[in-house]
Length: 383
Image 1 (cartoon, rainbow, N blue to C red):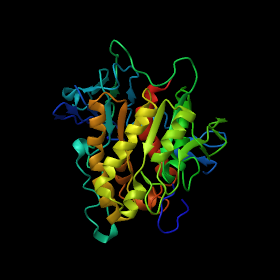
Image 2: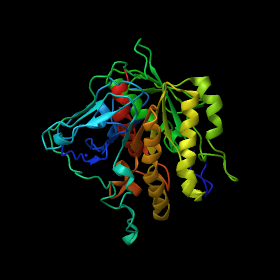
Image 3: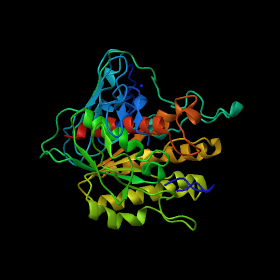
Image 4: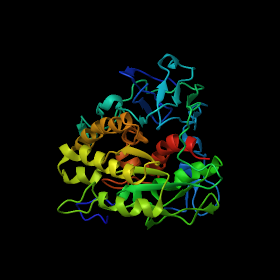
């Protein structure tokens, strides 16, 4: 969106606790949880990529998730109707490996902090305008212990679900959402570092969609510029905005992505538009994508914080409701995952200036952190 004052351009100590049959697994740096339903500038060296050729600083391949030598990897074999994460709660000791087996009959929800749908405590204090300063990730066992490898994934079931092709062709990913998906302020947005991480790991992906922006090349190879990010869009159309839900009927069959990365709802929260029903609207949107692409994997993101503390309260309430939306679809065997973008940004006490470019949009460092969260889930699925 162009910003017309109304719109948004569209952690190894591992803590695992059982919530019914839902496990929480904190992944290094990212605070990714796994829940089982049944069981642009030319160069940004800090982000670890070089757009338009060359090489950036420290590589953030493998999702940028190494911390004191703690490499996080995730297995690609999945069975049955989707993902079932059997997180080993007993492996939470420092120096040990926590394993989440991605095998079973239904989908896994993978998120950040806020396991079980609890809202982040960050943002509750607006002292000295610091909103969300420190502790915003609200992740149990937030500190990583060097050298402890967290490995997610192992063998699949009798029938393995793999959303990506195994014939050497790139996995088609549709980034779907608003201006943050579009990459407002940093053309290419999170897609730049996501692509760089995959390329550095020798894995293939291609972005698809009707939009196009970003650098022509990343790490010396052609960058797939396509996306389906729409500035200023809400979940559904509203009296003052367009929504992305009507696009599903046309863009999904037109581009047939194997993976959809869905992040939407910020503009709903900005306008405070019927926020009590926003999770329901999101669920209906997910259902429509599943109907259009029953074999695709849909990775849904809880949205990032803003510089506005009142808005952050609405965002956290919305985010807290999303795990249940995903769990419902997981229980019925849908290929759905959840990632939490909020803590990866909010855990920085200075995120409002260090990671955000304006009230709502990340800068290049913020987009790179988002890419790490996406890659922690997507990297193991790519070939």
